[in-house]
Length: 305
Ligand code: GLN
Image (tube, rainbow, N blue to C red; front, side, top):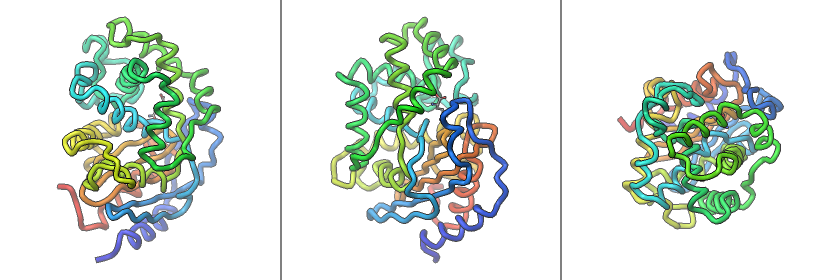
């Protein structure tokens, strides 16, 4: 049987040669300044070994991948009460959609679409004394890495152009499912989306969603087994918006994407894998990232199914 290293290297070379049919996200102008040639991947296994290829050490805007971290912290703080504020159903709609919220009386379908993540940010704004500082501290602890930071430029760029997110937040507030000031909640949301990490840092950080005792590499428990199972379940059903079914079908792992072109995926008993290629398909998921993960999991013999 080939090792994960070998499979990653061969898959990387193969996908690198493929024509990229994606487009870089420019609706957040600052994201448009990234070179679209970047392509990297990294795998971390539950025995704490990491192996990367290509631009695996370059930091990029993780965007919606941060929604796993905000959900994790809110879930730790609120427990099962959290699901009174946000549901766990796939939305079948784009990540920034306003549809469904009216009929659902302001309760977003899941924590991984913008509407849901904004409600999660509201929960954190209520719970944390200094939301931006405390959340960053949590991320650094989970990642065991003090270099992790927000990108001011991306956060500001998003604030200037985030009209849909302002609409979502105001609309949800009209149903009383946002408890804090809209500007304060969105300021926090934009900063969480602006977090920058490399593929290596991502694959190491999200190992806490594997059977590795659901802990950081220092052994601090992040989630209980049952909570980690639930976060993985939401990733499998909702991690890719209206392409969640397609991702489960082609890749077969729980995962989460971001419009910066990053994707992480979890094999709960074995590894976390991260990939980055900035050009996105029409559903807002990395074109080469998805292709890479599809080829990678097809070449390995181990599956969660
Ligand atoms: N910050 C982005 C937004 O709110 C996140 C979207 C994403 O990565 N899918 O539009």
